[in-house]
Image (tube, rainbow, N blue to C red):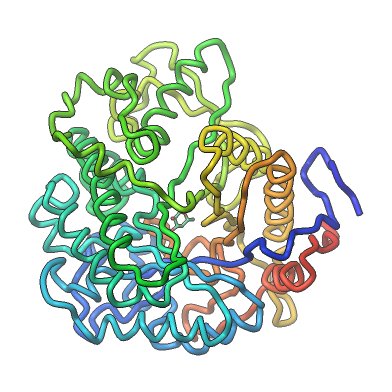
Length: 473
Ligand code: FCB
């Protein structure tokens, strides 16, 4: 057993019996079957079919064909020993145009999925919105239209009524920062807009949608111990020079506090309003909105992959032309510094210390709110030898991040569990199928599933509750 390893390569650490081990996916990334059983079109269908948007021209039309192979995938989850599975519901399967009558066939799929999980002793954790907005709602303005928040509340209430007796935990939105800033400012995610006013307006309407949905779920979710939450992707920021304090404050405001502010403290941070004053006066925030957004939650979903180092650019003129559409409206004078060191195939640096720091900081800021790691994992180009997928770098990444979570717990953070992203290799948004995050390898031609060495490693961790011995690197 090694503990206290400076690189977070501890072994033999034990996790308690109530620590939840699971894995996660999202609807558009795995389901396929985009035109079946009455499913409507989403903004990701439109975006992925727009030439030039997705690497290799990939789309989610088939993806992992999970819609048809769900029983096989459930069996794989059970064989790995997963205790929880986080999936997302495609809104356009439930309400094909984002409003009105329920599409029973679409609902049936999720109902069977939930029953299949429960039959195998796996806790269903449902995300209501993992980015696939019904296209009709986008045509009416998408998240820049306040009405979208009310449509989302209606959809949340439908889901609560239909599955509230069986779903263990709900998360309203996945990573609203991505929806608002990658979707409406940088334009690299659907709907692909580059309009700073739209992005900041979307921030508020996403926050409002979250608050309204929590109220609806509280009313509808009939399972008395069902837990309600949101999943945020926190920026963990490091400094490199004397300008970094200002850079960190700015990015923290746009990435983190724009959401935790209203959702968990009941107010937008003053400095965020000031940093963006040249773009908007935030008059889209109406009386009563902040009270509606500020709802008690049962846990906070934390997504973490990497940390970033930031500083202020020496001069605004130093901004590269591509920065015009960066996802940081009002703070484009912040520079993201390239740090040396190991990276995943996404180009993301590997910083397990960032996860420990984040969990400890969140626990200090929200002492009564339990934390659940709703996504952590890594994309690497997997190596297949003798029919097995030897992904030792992914094992190493996971080992180090589980160590980070363990250390945060030892420092008092109430980290309740850890869901690995992802259960299956899948459609990685603008990167298409070029990036593989799965514990299970997918051959996208044959749809054959092969559990990777990391999946076997995770199974051993779940069975023993001890971090397995590290594979030879
Ligand atoms: C997160 C997303 C998830 C996946 C991972 C790699 O931002 O929530 O769908 O793409 O990144």
